[in-house]
Length: 468
Image 1 (cartoon, helix red, strand yellow):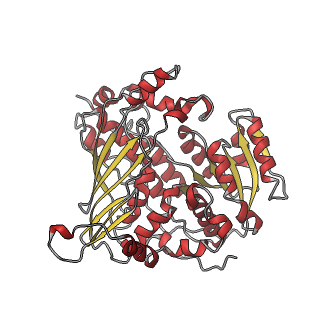
Image 2: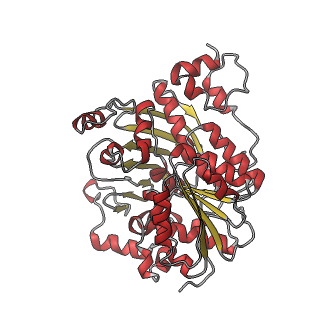
Image 3: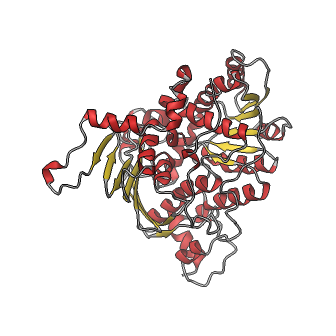
């Protein structure tokens, strides 16, 4: 079967058109060769990338819904301390822009430019001369186009997750960032959570020995939000579940794990295989609440297995249909220790080969490790007490603080464009694998081979500044 025909047969013509394979010959070698041979124009030149320092980062925010409102609040301390200024606000709905402008006026004297009403108004904000950084907080399908347009306007861009959900968009984001020499960061807040940073610091200090296996997830009952006509405008998030099947929300679990495994910094994803369970929970709930949408393609649980080039494994799960307590799992298995999240538990091997000794650390011992290996960034920001716990228990503030202060100082960002697209590319690859009966999918190299060779994580480097 010809390559194009094979792809169309497993994912449909519309999905095929979103994949960057049109320039390749159709000699019947199949999908695996196509993925391995995909775009080779990236150079990996943005590892450790830095630009001139920006004394006060001027920010434009596109998208002022629930998440946009939360991220705006993270800027209060930064604005009050002259590290940042909000210079532009944009949303389709004018009343949202008005409410956010009023909120901002409580702690910022200058008045931002505002845009609303037309679906292309955001481009005017991207063109605004006094914008250094565009913050993109819109529905998923708009993230990549807005980032690409913003970088081409000379702006640094920071996007909510995922930064892309087609392979074509992933390649274009990397190519554009390398061409324009602009920062392109995905705002993965879970990389800044206290637990994940504590585990990362233990890994960096050798507590786990050599890591063999990890597990991460996004297990979050979102039925009420998705079926509501108010929470996600025009129910955009629910509509993805009608036509698609795979892991749509990879980065909350995978981002921290990728830091644990030095992905892009000495190791990379080799290939994955993915499968979804049948769908039942979302459709049954939709019928109970008389939703306009009651039939969904996305299975209740997606499980994706990833293997790295160095032989480590990752189990990634996704379920937003099922009623259950929230969990990202956050499991790390090493030769010397094991961590299991939700609730956070730690086992440290004392070298005694006795099965009855295999217990989680007692609370007192656990707290000793947690205190000893608290990430220095968390320890520092706890001195900014009134801000530290803002946004999802604090990780939103830590993320935005870190982004702005790195730009202030002209330092590399913690999450670069390669991280952003690698963590997001799992989604289209999982869809391909699910549609082809869990066929293994090779992972494209977005780094131009530069993932090879050990590189330090930027998140482990402290900023040489004193903040009051």
